[in-house]
Length: 262
Ligand SMILES: [Zn+2]
Image 1 (cartoon, helix red, strand yellow):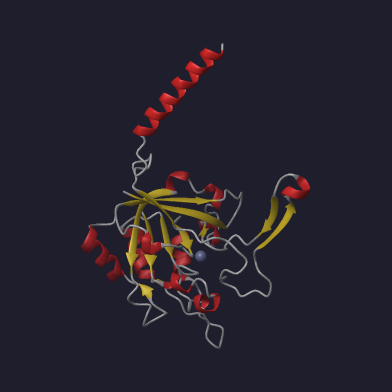
Image 2 (tube, rainbow, N blue to C red):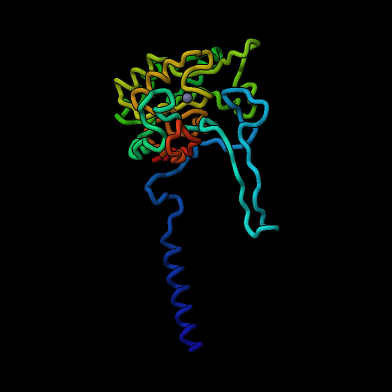
């Protein structure tokens, strides 16, 4: 019996060895070369659109390994917090809430438009149709049903909520967003599924009436705000996986976003 166990053990070890040799760690099972996490970690210090006296995010430990044998927390946070998704219902009556967005709209070709040169001298910069044209000159026409994310360079301010909100003495914020013209071109001319940006809002900080929010969300195009690591995402040829919490009736949700590089 002992001898048989020994033989079986040897056979298993040999199988493991053979499989281990066949394993190629540099290739993802999906065929993609790399996965870039486009998500900021959530903690109480991160910047918020509205300034708050106490942190908008609370995490309270309700069980510990020492006392209860397991670790768990209760959390509370706004739907639009950290890297998050605006569902069409956020601004448009009768449109999809976050749980209703069809999943096939959450996995899409990814387009990253670099506009980093402009906000350095003009924090009120709005992504222009010319920026889209420049991307297309370099990479060809934006594929239909893509998610477009603007890299404005604003992410470098993320660790300072004051610099990231960039409010003036009157409390008016100054950070880049999309122009309505660019949004219209991307929605009507390129049929995008979602628009993303590495700032607090798709509409620039100065905006009081949020024209891009009204325009895109009423056309079922969702938003991704406070996107992270955009400089590491592929400009063209990648895919994006957008994974919000499935909050029934939600206006939006914190979201995990992955860029897949070919
Ligand atoms: Zn928004």
